[in-house]
Image (tube, rainbow, N blue to C red; front, side, top):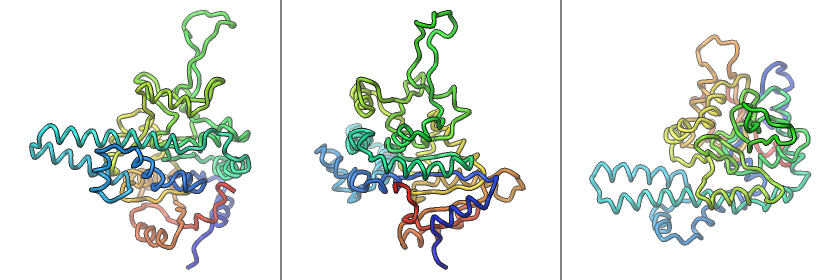
Length: 347
């Protein structure tokens, strides 16, 4: 049976009037823009180049470039060290290795970006906006597990997507008191007040999103500094982005549940209806929490009028197709697999 193409997905979208089509983007979305920047190899080479002695020992021992696997095994090792009564120095080194790796990952993603939004060619912005709009026009929601700012830049630069709600907005300072119009002041971009109209969800956090302890805020371009410069300044001041870097699916979900923004995004993903199209998301062994949320939305075996009926998964290679075919039984809704290379995401 021949593999479906993205044109087949588009036909399904057009033939199912009244059904929402949601979109989930994974790391393949960024790699399709530039695999030299956003691949695991690029991140690994950057982190390895930091010459941190402890991390170098970890890389040499693990023999892998999969950060999720390394972080998971460090966490497991720490639990074992605790259980077996290992000395404090060893436990401290394990914790330090995990902490340094997470920090280095943030630095790597930040430093490997194009310098600023205008480095992304306009034709690529327009092509990506057209691709995304196909789903938003069908009352779909946009979910991403990516940490980088590519999607943020597309939403910011595209005239057709600028008004798309991501839950962030400004609040008037001193709202309970009278202030002359000319003296009114507004807050930084805060999440929460506009969440009911939110259609863009950063499920694993992202570089521009910070948790101050009181508010979830989104960093932005200002007249003085570019976006990445403002993010860098926050990191230098000891603030770190909301950024899920835990190992397996259970650990990721635990991280998500400890942050109100991430938890909200996950719950909305678990409540989506209609169909879901994925691009660049490989449903790996550390993504069980995503599959669980899809199955919650599917309401398997229940006669529910509004639920998730089907999923269309983009695959890049024959190996991907074979892997996904073996995964079909994990999903409690109808599964389609299409050739991801036929999707004109970046033109």
